[in-house]
Image (cartoon, rainbow, N blue to C red; front, top):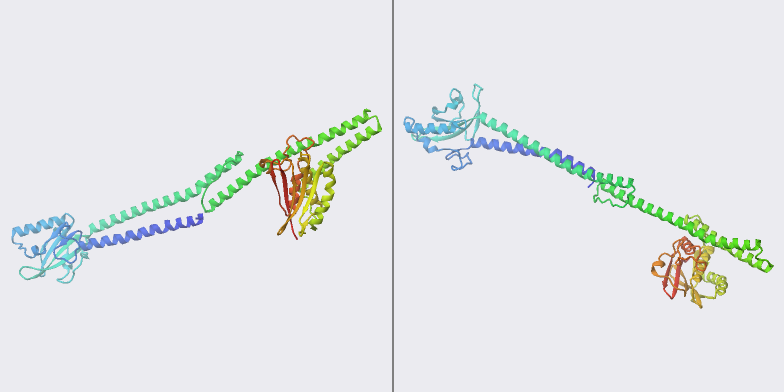
Length: 484
């Protein structure tokens, strides 16, 4: 959930929960207050339709039949009435008994008041009613119950309660409700604030720790925070940045190592022919080559070494331009059958000089036209054939150029029967400066860029290049060119 939605929900909860609690409290308070009025604080009047309390549960039970048959001139009955009045007095209640229009008994609670003038007439009230005497000093809650006395005269029993008690209870209840509401609001706000703060502070601390690690050049960690909010997205972007930064630094280190290796390899490859050239020239200067034939031989050898240096520099320059995409391609529609025949004739002389037979295998009926840069594809074929000749160690060496047609692409396969390449080395032969012969001797050592250049050229022609090899049987290099 997004943080803005979390904050919105938190504000809604903190706003409406107190309102709901206040509403519930007020409704509950009103019900209890009304119930207290109806039940006259736990008084059960026998036969009254206004009391929900059973006789057993009622703190004070008034027997209507008993009161209707009382004889106030009888001390025993009068004592019963006083005992009942005393019990009512313990909860600030009293009793009034009216016969016809005359008050025959009243509690001390209502003496010296004019409440008698405001009592309901017989049959007038059947529910609890508030009454405030004219002196305005007290207020009472009255429960009226009409009865028929033993002598068949009409009368009423009034249970009177001091309204101050209800007011005190009312105030206490309000205080309790407000206290509970305040406590609940504090707890709810605290829980919501804790939840929101933890959902924000925790990932921020994680980001701070991750930033400190990066500052200390430590990128070997992973920032994990699974959330879909804004901070979770930020953590995800930070982790992507860390991964890319780590890969970039590792790649930079690799480039640095490759650059150092390139300098070392080029220095090695240049030093060997230059040393030879220097030796030949010193031989001529020192008179070692005394005859014209020997001088010519020395000069031809020096010239060959110069060509080797020139080739190495050309390879390095070409690869450097390919590496930075600084070499442009000139694409053309090429008849691949005729093109391979021309390459075959050009390479055949070189392979025959080294005792290696070059073969061209093109099935009849296929004649693919491809989109390619003629000169650069020729360089690829020359590089692959030249690389194959270096690693053929048997007397009857064979190199075969084969053409296959495969839907949208033409596939050129160049196979040899050399010593083969193991799987570990096979995955690296298209990397720059890589050689399966770590000795870098003159018979097999080259610039180490031939196949790397070939890969760059093929990819620049929208094709793919790969190799397959079997130890002791030979190696095949495949590359594809897109058909018109």
